[in-house]
Length: 269
Image (cartoon, rainbow, N blue to C red):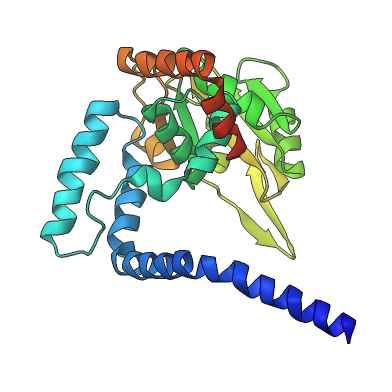
């Protein structure tokens, strides 16, 4: 009888504790219902953001998604959230804090770049004269990373091993002309043979691991790539602008002056 009474008391306390969550759950259900109605427009805006705006600076990005695309979607009667923000669709506060803790600058454009890089399906090609993206990726992919340049002798062997073993590869200092040997990799010319995936690299058949990840980086500030390269890669502009540096400096000041806020941000990761 005593054990039964104890269990009943615990059950009552559990029900009482969950009762306070009832209001929050109800509000969350209503929010999800509203979001389900506007999901199509929000996802279309976010998909366009990932596919097309990465190569532009802050002003042109906002011109595209805030003015042109949002107004066009509304004009066509496609339901979307008022003031929909692609960054909020592609990422959240916890993921943003994680990227910042890995070394990504905390300004808006850098967070957008991080969201595009982690969501794009084409290989990212980073316009990165100040090496901000490279510093972040080296920490993000630490322990599973090979860094090569197309001018070194054994780069093809390193790339082949990474493709087979599912490692991450960064090709640094890419010029405007990319070695034709990379075409099958950039175009993802993958085919299935039996249970395994393969692609042709340097005239040889190489087994392909789906975990393989490729990043290309150029230090050119205004590169001009052929249309096929732009079609095979997602261009992402990591050039540090004056506005971006102001935002980064402000974030550093907050980190030094208000470490309590920084600690809260880290707790989200």
